[in-house]
Image (tube, rainbow, N blue to C red; front, side):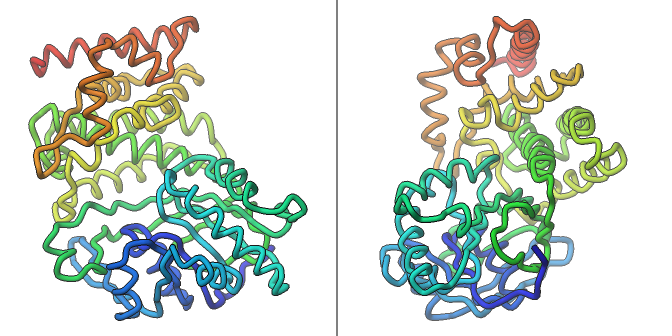
Length: 405
Protein backbone atom coordinates (compact mmCIF):
# COMPACT_ATOMS: atom_id res chain seq x y z
CA UNK A 1 0.00 0.00 0.00
CA UNK A 2 1.12 3.55 -0.65
CA UNK A 3 -0.11 6.94 0.43
CA UNK A 4 -1.32 8.94 -2.55
CA UNK A 5 -2.63 12.39 -3.33
CA UNK A 6 -6.34 12.46 -2.37
CA UNK A 7 -8.81 11.58 -5.06
CA UNK A 8 -12.33 12.78 -5.71
CA UNK A 9 -15.25 11.59 -3.61
CA UNK A 10 -15.99 10.65 -0.01
CA UNK A 11 -19.42 9.22 0.82
CA UNK A 12 -20.01 9.94 4.49
CA UNK A 13 -22.87 8.36 6.43
CA UNK A 14 -23.79 10.95 9.05
CA UNK A 15 -24.12 14.72 8.68
CA UNK A 16 -24.14 15.29 12.43
CA UNK A 17 -21.74 17.26 14.58
CA UNK A 18 -18.73 14.97 14.20
CA UNK A 19 -19.42 14.30 10.53
CA UNK A 20 -19.50 18.00 9.65
CA UNK A 21 -16.98 19.44 12.10
CA UNK A 22 -14.27 16.82 11.64
CA UNK A 23 -14.56 14.32 8.81
CA UNK A 24 -16.34 16.41 6.22
CA UNK A 25 -14.10 19.39 6.94
CA UNK A 26 -10.86 17.38 6.73
CA UNK A 27 -11.71 15.58 3.50
CA UNK A 28 -13.07 18.73 1.86
CA UNK A 29 -9.85 20.57 2.72
CA UNK A 30 -7.97 17.72 1.05
CA UNK A 31 -9.86 18.29 -2.20
CA UNK A 32 -12.51 15.62 -1.87
CA UNK A 33 -16.11 16.15 -2.79
CA UNK A 34 -17.99 15.14 0.36
CA UNK A 35 -21.37 13.48 -0.16
CA UNK A 36 -23.25 13.22 3.13
CA UNK A 37 -25.88 10.53 3.63
CA UNK A 38 -28.40 11.37 6.35
CA UNK A 39 -32.09 11.00 7.16
CA UNK A 40 -32.53 14.48 8.65
CA UNK A 41 -34.60 16.34 6.06
CA UNK A 42 -33.45 19.75 7.28
CA UNK A 43 -29.75 18.91 7.03
CA UNK A 44 -30.06 17.17 3.66
CA UNK A 45 -32.03 20.05 2.12
CA UNK A 46 -29.71 22.69 3.56
CA UNK A 47 -26.57 20.92 2.34
CA UNK A 48 -27.97 20.62 -1.17
CA UNK A 49 -29.09 24.24 -1.18
CA UNK A 50 -25.91 25.78 0.25
CA UNK A 51 -23.30 23.26 -0.91
CA UNK A 52 -21.18 24.55 1.98
CA UNK A 53 -21.24 25.15 5.73
CA UNK A 54 -19.24 26.78 8.52
CA UNK A 55 -17.33 25.22 11.39
CA UNK A 56 -16.90 27.71 14.23
CA UNK A 57 -13.65 26.93 16.00
CA UNK A 58 -13.80 27.91 19.66
CA UNK A 59 -10.32 28.72 20.95
CA UNK A 60 -8.31 31.61 22.34
CA UNK A 61 -8.57 33.18 18.92
CA UNK A 62 -11.88 32.12 17.46
CA UNK A 63 -12.15 31.53 13.74
CA UNK A 64 -14.54 30.15 11.18
CA UNK A 65 -13.71 27.43 8.69
CA UNK A 66 -15.62 27.48 5.42
CA UNK A 67 -16.27 23.95 4.17
CA UNK A 68 -17.32 23.69 0.55
CA UNK A 69 -17.69 21.09 -2.20
CA UNK A 70 -20.35 19.23 -0.20
CA UNK A 71 -23.81 17.88 -0.96
CA UNK A 72 -26.17 15.29 0.47
CA UNK A 73 -28.35 12.32 -0.41
CA UNK A 74 -31.25 11.26 1.76
CA UNK A 75 -30.59 7.93 3.44
CA UNK A 76 -34.04 6.63 2.47
CA UNK A 77 -33.24 7.02 -1.23
CA UNK A 78 -31.48 3.68 -1.40
CA UNK A 79 -30.88 3.66 -5.16
CA UNK A 80 -29.17 7.06 -5.11
CA UNK A 81 -27.07 6.18 -2.09
CA UNK A 82 -26.04 2.89 -3.71
CA UNK A 83 -24.92 4.74 -6.83
CA UNK A 84 -22.84 7.16 -4.76
CA UNK A 85 -21.19 4.22 -3.00
CA UNK A 86 -20.55 2.46 -6.29
CA UNK A 87 -18.72 5.52 -7.64
CA UNK A 88 -16.97 6.61 -4.42
CA UNK A 89 -13.26 6.61 -3.72
CA UNK A 90 -13.81 6.04 -0.03
CA UNK A 91 -16.78 5.62 2.33
CA UNK A 92 -16.93 6.64 5.98
CA UNK A 93 -19.39 6.43 8.86
CA UNK A 94 -20.07 8.85 11.73
CA UNK A 95 -23.57 7.87 12.82
CA UNK A 96 -23.06 6.22 16.21
CA UNK A 97 -22.50 2.55 16.85
CA UNK A 98 -26.17 1.84 17.53
CA UNK A 99 -27.13 3.16 14.09
CA UNK A 100 -24.68 1.13 12.02
CA UNK A 101 -27.22 -1.65 11.52
CA UNK A 102 -29.40 0.72 9.52
CA UNK A 103 -26.83 1.22 6.76
CA UNK A 104 -25.61 -2.34 6.10
CA UNK A 105 -28.26 -3.20 3.50
CA UNK A 106 -27.73 0.04 1.57
CA UNK A 107 -23.96 -0.30 1.71
CA UNK A 108 -24.22 -3.86 0.46
CA UNK A 109 -26.38 -2.73 -2.45
CA UNK A 110 -23.78 -0.13 -3.37
CA UNK A 111 -20.95 -2.66 -3.16
CA UNK A 112 -22.77 -5.03 -5.51
CA UNK A 113 -23.44 -2.22 -7.96
CA UNK A 114 -19.77 -1.26 -7.70
CA UNK A 115 -18.71 -4.80 -8.56
CA UNK A 116 -21.03 -4.78 -11.58
CA UNK A 117 -19.33 -1.54 -12.70
CA UNK A 118 -15.92 -3.17 -12.20
CA UNK A 119 -14.81 -0.34 -9.93
CA UNK A 120 -12.54 -2.41 -7.69
CA UNK A 121 -12.26 -2.54 -3.91
CA UNK A 122 -13.61 0.06 -1.49
CA UNK A 123 -12.50 1.09 1.97
CA UNK A 124 -14.98 2.02 4.69
CA UNK A 125 -13.44 4.16 7.43
CA UNK A 126 -15.39 3.71 10.68
CA UNK A 127 -15.32 6.94 12.69
CA UNK A 128 -17.19 5.52 15.67
CA UNK A 129 -16.20 5.68 19.32
CA UNK A 130 -15.78 1.94 19.72
CA UNK A 131 -12.87 -0.46 20.01
CA UNK A 132 -12.96 -3.35 17.52
CA UNK A 133 -15.73 -1.64 15.56
CA UNK A 134 -14.91 -3.71 12.46
CA UNK A 135 -15.86 -6.87 14.36
CA UNK A 136 -19.37 -5.49 14.72
CA UNK A 137 -19.44 -4.05 11.20
CA UNK A 138 -18.21 -7.13 9.34
CA UNK A 139 -20.96 -9.66 10.20
CA UNK A 140 -23.64 -6.97 9.87
CA UNK A 141 -22.53 -6.15 6.33
CA UNK A 142 -21.81 -9.77 5.39
CA UNK A 143 -25.42 -10.68 6.23
CA UNK A 144 -26.63 -8.51 3.33
CA UNK A 145 -24.12 -9.75 0.73
CA UNK A 146 -24.29 -12.94 -1.36
CA UNK A 147 -22.27 -15.85 -0.01
CA UNK A 148 -19.98 -15.74 -3.04
CA UNK A 149 -19.15 -12.02 -2.65
CA UNK A 150 -15.38 -11.77 -1.90
CA UNK A 151 -15.75 -9.31 0.94
CA UNK A 152 -12.24 -9.86 2.29
CA UNK A 153 -10.63 -8.71 -0.95
CA UNK A 154 -13.14 -6.05 -2.02
CA UNK A 155 -13.91 -4.26 1.26
CA UNK A 156 -11.54 -2.76 3.79
CA UNK A 157 -13.09 -2.01 7.19
CA UNK A 158 -10.83 0.59 8.72
CA UNK A 159 -11.02 1.39 12.43
CA UNK A 160 -10.10 4.76 13.93
CA UNK A 161 -9.53 6.52 17.23
CA UNK A 162 -10.96 10.04 17.05
CA UNK A 163 -9.76 12.73 19.46
CA UNK A 164 -12.22 15.63 19.22
CA UNK A 165 -14.53 17.49 21.60
CA UNK A 166 -17.76 18.64 19.96
CA UNK A 167 -20.16 20.07 22.57
CA UNK A 168 -23.91 20.35 22.32
CA UNK A 169 -24.84 23.53 20.45
CA UNK A 170 -27.39 26.01 21.71
CA UNK A 171 -30.81 26.09 20.08
CA UNK A 172 -30.08 29.64 18.91
CA UNK A 173 -27.15 28.46 16.79
CA UNK A 174 -29.04 25.60 15.17
CA UNK A 175 -32.10 27.78 14.59
CA UNK A 176 -30.10 30.52 12.85
CA UNK A 177 -28.21 28.07 10.61
CA UNK A 178 -28.76 24.31 10.92
CA UNK A 179 -25.48 23.59 9.14
CA UNK A 180 -23.18 25.61 11.40
CA UNK A 181 -21.31 23.45 13.89
CA UNK A 182 -19.18 24.47 16.88
CA UNK A 183 -16.05 22.55 17.84
CA UNK A 184 -12.69 22.91 19.51
CA UNK A 185 -9.58 23.65 17.46
CA UNK A 186 -8.02 20.23 18.12
CA UNK A 187 -8.17 17.58 15.37
CA UNK A 188 -6.41 14.25 15.80
CA UNK A 189 -7.50 10.96 14.26
CA UNK A 190 -5.47 7.75 14.36
CA UNK A 191 -6.32 5.33 11.56
CA UNK A 192 -5.50 1.63 11.19
CA UNK A 193 -3.03 1.57 8.31
CA UNK A 194 -3.13 -2.22 8.06
CA UNK A 195 -6.86 -2.47 7.28
CA UNK A 196 -7.00 -0.74 3.88
CA UNK A 197 -7.79 -2.86 0.86
CA UNK A 198 -6.86 -0.11 -1.60
CA UNK A 199 -4.80 3.06 -1.72
CA UNK A 200 -4.50 5.10 1.46
CA UNK A 201 -5.85 8.66 1.15
CA UNK A 202 -3.60 11.47 2.28
CA UNK A 203 -5.81 13.68 4.44
CA UNK A 204 -4.63 16.29 6.91
CA UNK A 205 -4.87 15.24 10.59
CA UNK A 206 -5.35 11.55 9.76
CA UNK A 207 -2.41 9.71 11.30
CA UNK A 208 -1.87 6.20 9.99
CA UNK A 209 -0.58 3.65 12.48
CA UNK A 210 0.04 -0.08 12.62
CA UNK A 211 -0.79 -0.14 16.33
CA UNK A 212 -4.24 1.43 16.58
CA UNK A 213 -5.16 -0.33 19.88
CA UNK A 214 -2.47 1.69 21.67
CA UNK A 215 -3.94 5.01 20.56
CA UNK A 216 -7.51 3.89 21.12
CA UNK A 217 -6.63 2.90 24.68
CA UNK A 218 -4.76 6.15 25.29
CA UNK A 219 -7.72 8.20 24.13
CA UNK A 220 -10.33 6.10 25.94
CA UNK A 221 -8.42 5.56 29.17
CA UNK A 222 -7.03 9.10 29.42
CA UNK A 223 -9.20 11.64 27.57
CA UNK A 224 -12.55 9.86 28.00
CA UNK A 225 -11.76 8.70 31.51
CA UNK A 226 -10.54 12.15 32.60
CA UNK A 227 -13.52 13.84 30.96
CA UNK A 228 -15.96 11.51 32.75
CA UNK A 229 -14.22 11.98 36.11
CA UNK A 230 -14.38 15.76 35.66
CA UNK A 231 -18.12 15.51 35.01
CA UNK A 232 -18.84 13.15 37.90
CA UNK A 233 -16.92 15.15 40.49
CA UNK A 234 -18.27 18.36 39.01
CA UNK A 235 -21.82 17.14 39.52
CA UNK A 236 -21.13 16.15 43.13
CA UNK A 237 -19.62 19.58 43.74
CA UNK A 238 -22.71 21.30 42.33
CA UNK A 239 -21.17 22.64 39.10
CA UNK A 240 -22.71 22.83 35.63
CA UNK A 241 -19.85 22.95 33.09
CA UNK A 242 -16.60 21.12 32.46
CA UNK A 243 -14.81 24.49 32.52
CA UNK A 244 -16.05 25.20 36.04
CA UNK A 245 -15.22 21.68 37.20
CA UNK A 246 -11.65 21.51 35.88
CA UNK A 247 -10.92 24.88 37.48
CA UNK A 248 -11.91 23.53 40.88
CA UNK A 249 -8.62 22.76 42.67
CA UNK A 250 -9.80 19.46 44.18
CA UNK A 251 -11.27 18.18 40.91
CA UNK A 252 -8.31 19.23 38.79
CA UNK A 253 -5.87 17.46 41.08
CA UNK A 254 -7.97 14.28 41.07
CA UNK A 255 -8.33 14.31 37.27
CA UNK A 256 -4.63 14.94 36.63
CA UNK A 257 -3.71 12.18 39.07
CA UNK A 258 -6.15 9.76 37.46
CA UNK A 259 -4.73 10.45 33.99
CA UNK A 260 -1.22 9.88 35.32
CA UNK A 261 -2.41 6.57 36.76
CA UNK A 262 -3.80 5.42 33.43
CA UNK A 263 -0.62 6.68 31.76
CA UNK A 264 1.60 4.46 33.87
CA UNK A 265 -0.46 1.46 32.81
CA UNK A 266 -0.45 2.49 29.14
CA UNK A 267 3.34 2.92 29.15
CA UNK A 268 3.69 -0.58 30.59
CA UNK A 269 1.29 -2.01 27.99
CA UNK A 270 2.66 -0.10 24.97
CA UNK A 271 6.32 0.77 25.67
CA UNK A 272 7.06 1.19 21.95
CA UNK A 273 4.39 3.90 21.58
CA UNK A 274 4.37 5.90 24.83
CA UNK A 275 6.73 7.17 27.49
CA UNK A 276 6.46 9.42 30.52
CA UNK A 277 7.34 12.60 28.62
CA UNK A 278 4.85 12.08 25.78
CA UNK A 279 2.06 11.12 28.17
CA UNK A 280 2.70 14.08 30.46
CA UNK A 281 2.47 16.37 27.45
CA UNK A 282 -0.75 14.65 26.36
CA UNK A 283 -2.28 15.26 29.80
CA UNK A 284 -1.18 18.91 29.77
CA UNK A 285 -2.95 19.42 26.44
CA UNK A 286 -6.08 17.67 27.70
CA UNK A 287 -6.34 19.90 30.77
CA UNK A 288 -6.01 22.93 28.53
CA UNK A 289 -8.77 21.61 26.27
CA UNK A 290 -11.07 20.87 29.21
CA UNK A 291 -10.40 24.44 30.41
CA UNK A 292 -11.75 26.07 27.25
CA UNK A 293 -14.58 28.30 28.56
CA UNK A 294 -15.91 29.06 25.09
CA UNK A 295 -17.00 25.44 24.52
CA UNK A 296 -19.69 25.73 27.22
CA UNK A 297 -19.47 21.95 27.54
CA UNK A 298 -21.92 20.71 30.14
CA UNK A 299 -21.49 18.23 32.97
CA UNK A 300 -24.67 16.57 31.70
CA UNK A 301 -23.39 15.94 28.15
CA UNK A 302 -20.03 14.56 29.22
CA UNK A 303 -21.25 12.37 32.07
CA UNK A 304 -24.54 10.95 30.77
CA UNK A 305 -25.11 7.27 29.97
CA UNK A 306 -23.72 5.93 33.23
CA UNK A 307 -24.39 2.26 32.54
CA UNK A 308 -22.29 2.28 29.37
CA UNK A 309 -19.48 4.32 30.89
CA UNK A 310 -19.25 2.06 33.93
CA UNK A 311 -19.16 -1.16 31.86
CA UNK A 312 -16.16 -3.47 32.01
CA UNK A 313 -14.31 -2.42 28.87
CA UNK A 314 -15.16 1.26 28.95
CA UNK A 315 -13.32 4.37 30.18
CA UNK A 316 -13.22 3.69 33.92
CA UNK A 317 -13.18 -0.04 34.59
CA UNK A 318 -10.96 -0.53 31.52
CA UNK A 319 -7.96 1.44 32.85
CA UNK A 320 -8.49 -0.06 36.31
CA UNK A 321 -8.14 -3.56 34.85
CA UNK A 322 -5.11 -2.50 32.81
CA UNK A 323 -3.49 -1.09 35.94
CA UNK A 324 -4.28 -4.31 37.79
CA UNK A 325 -2.67 -6.32 34.99
CA UNK A 326 0.60 -4.47 35.52
CA UNK A 327 0.49 -4.51 39.30
CA UNK A 328 -0.36 -0.82 39.64
CA UNK A 329 -2.87 0.93 41.88
CA UNK A 330 -5.21 3.66 40.64
CA UNK A 331 -7.04 5.31 43.56
CA UNK A 332 -8.25 8.30 41.56
CA UNK A 333 -9.72 6.19 38.75
CA UNK A 334 -11.32 4.10 41.48
CA UNK A 335 -12.82 7.31 42.83
CA UNK A 336 -14.21 7.98 39.36
CA UNK A 337 -16.11 4.67 39.30
CA UNK A 338 -17.68 5.44 42.67
CA UNK A 339 -18.54 9.00 41.60
CA UNK A 340 -20.15 7.71 38.41
CA UNK A 341 -22.61 5.68 40.47
CA UNK A 342 -23.79 8.92 42.11
CA UNK A 343 -24.09 10.94 38.91
CA UNK A 344 -27.58 12.42 38.46
CA UNK A 345 -27.02 15.50 36.30
CA UNK A 346 -30.02 16.86 34.39
CA UNK A 347 -30.32 18.58 31.03
CA UNK A 348 -31.49 22.12 30.37
CA UNK A 349 -35.09 20.95 30.77
CA UNK A 350 -34.39 19.50 34.21
CA UNK A 351 -34.54 15.90 33.03
CA UNK A 352 -32.18 12.96 33.47
CA UNK A 353 -30.87 11.15 30.41
CA UNK A 354 -33.41 8.36 29.95
CA UNK A 355 -30.94 5.54 30.60
CA UNK A 356 -29.60 7.35 33.66
CA UNK A 357 -33.12 7.65 35.01
CA UNK A 358 -33.45 3.88 34.74
CA UNK A 359 -30.09 3.48 36.49
CA UNK A 360 -31.13 5.82 39.31
CA UNK A 361 -34.59 4.35 39.82
CA UNK A 362 -34.10 0.68 39.00
CA UNK A 363 -30.41 -0.28 39.16
CA UNK A 364 -28.85 1.77 41.96
CA UNK A 365 -31.43 0.65 44.55
CA UNK A 366 -30.28 -2.95 43.95
CA UNK A 367 -27.04 -2.07 45.70
CA UNK A 368 -23.40 -1.41 44.90
CA UNK A 369 -22.49 -5.10 44.83
CA UNK A 370 -25.07 -5.67 42.10
CA UNK A 371 -23.72 -2.72 40.10
CA UNK A 372 -20.13 -3.88 40.41
CA UNK A 373 -21.01 -7.37 39.23
CA UNK A 374 -23.72 -6.76 36.63
CA UNK A 375 -22.84 -3.32 35.25
CA UNK A 376 -19.08 -3.11 35.81
CA UNK A 377 -18.58 -6.80 35.07
CA UNK A 378 -16.23 -7.42 38.00
CA UNK A 379 -16.02 -10.93 39.39
CA UNK A 380 -15.51 -11.24 43.16
CA UNK A 381 -14.33 -14.85 42.66
CA UNK A 382 -11.08 -13.51 41.23
CA UNK A 383 -8.85 -12.21 44.05
CA UNK A 384 -7.53 -9.20 42.15
CA UNK A 385 -10.99 -8.16 40.99
CA UNK A 386 -12.30 -8.73 44.51
CA UNK A 387 -9.74 -6.17 45.66
CA UNK A 388 -10.95 -3.71 43.03
CA UNK A 389 -14.50 -4.24 44.24
CA UNK A 390 -13.46 -3.58 47.83
CA UNK A 391 -11.58 -0.41 46.82
CA UNK A 392 -14.54 0.95 44.85
CA UNK A 393 -16.92 0.26 47.72
CA UNK A 394 -14.65 2.17 50.11
CA UNK A 395 -14.45 5.11 47.68
CA UNK A 396 -18.23 5.05 47.36
CA UNK A 397 -18.64 5.26 51.12
CA UNK A 398 -16.16 8.14 51.32
CA UNK A 399 -18.02 10.10 48.63
CA UNK A 400 -21.35 9.56 50.36
CA UNK A 401 -19.87 11.06 53.52
CA UNK A 402 -18.00 13.88 51.77
CA UNK A 403 -20.99 15.04 49.76
CA UNK A 404 -23.62 13.90 52.29
CA UNK A 405 -25.67 11.90 49.81
